[in-house]
Figure 1 (tube, rainbow, N blue to C red):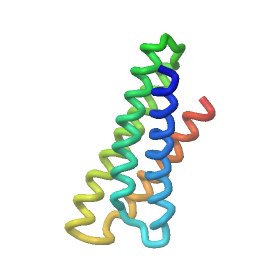
Figure 2 (cartoon, rainbow, N blue to C red):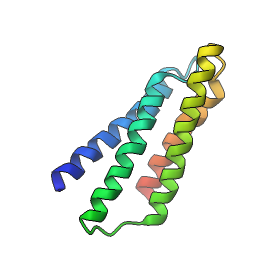
Figure 3 (cartoon, one colour):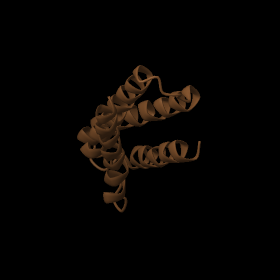
Figure 4 (cartoon, rainbow, N blue to C red):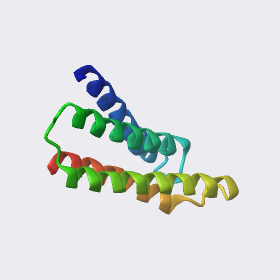
Length: 115
């Protein structure tokens, strides 16, 4: 069980890097890119898997923190989906969505570390 948790945690960090890294990569000409969407999907899926695995392992979890992080991750996912659709229709028009997704990714890290 420990190995599975560690693998999903690594994948969770990779998803986070996809969101924030993609945002930083396009910050001079901000737009929503596929890396943000893929990172958001990976974050939500691996986050849920981590909660399930840790619950099965009888770990002591802070459910309030997990709930808030889930809401933030789902908002990032929605922003990425909407941004990708808008970007296809009107390239370069998704700067606000890109900044929101990137900043919410940073907020999720802050919640994870400080709470």
